[in-house]
Amino acid sequence: MDSETLEAYEAHGERLASEYREHKRVSSEKFKRAFPNHSRILEVGVGSGIDFSVMIKAGFEVLGLEPSKELQKHAERFFPEVKGRVVADAFPLERERLKEWGSSFDGIHCCAFVMHFKKKDRPLIWEQFGTLLRKGGRLFCRFSETRDGLDEQGRDAMGRFYQILSEDEILDECEKAGFRLLEKWEDKSVSFSRGKGWKSHVYEWNGSD
Ligand SMILES: C[S@@+](CC[C@H](N)C(=O)[O-])C[C@H]1O[C@@H](n2cnc3c(N)ncnc32)[C@H](O)[C@@H]1O
Image (cartoon, rainbow, N blue to C red; front, side, top):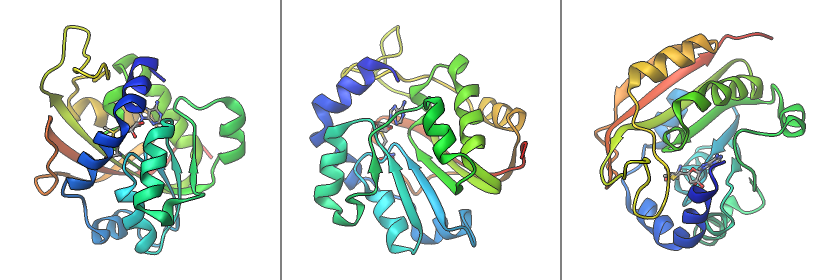
């Protein structure tokens, strides 16, 4: 993972977690629709833990991945149900992790995560998501297309890297990686302070066995 981005989450974790808890989030109904009859979910980029908590309360078995120890600490403090279910690791995953977790998830949810990768690095992320999902599993991916306040290198004031992207690019990359789009919508109900044009895509994994 980009080390400057991780350092920024470590340095500003408490404030960011509190900001994320304030944002209006998607409802448990949306998760149930995205992951019908699907139980084991990987929450990538746990952040404040708020979506994780909603999914646990909705009856899903959730495992989280969060590289920032600081964010993990605050997630566990505010949402005790998250405790013991978060692994400190980052995408792209190492081969051993992929072997351990391969084809073991019915769903993957990631919100405000994919923009942290350069375009050239995204295909590997989709490929790894496919490796982690069972055939027919779902990917619920939420992202913003643009962001205010970035410098020429695509870094915000805290040093986090953000890639400006379009939903057509995401759709094209996911389809090439073996995902089939089931549903997409613009997330007007979810407000984030700096991201603009929030999109939600739900895919089914149809790739190789
Ligand atoms: C903008 S925050 C969003 C947090 C949470 N998903 C939300 O929507 O409130 C981005 C999250 O992605 C995590 N993240 C960034 N790069 C990552 C990587 N390479 N692998 C896993 N998580 C990463 C960050 O630590 C942070 O939790």
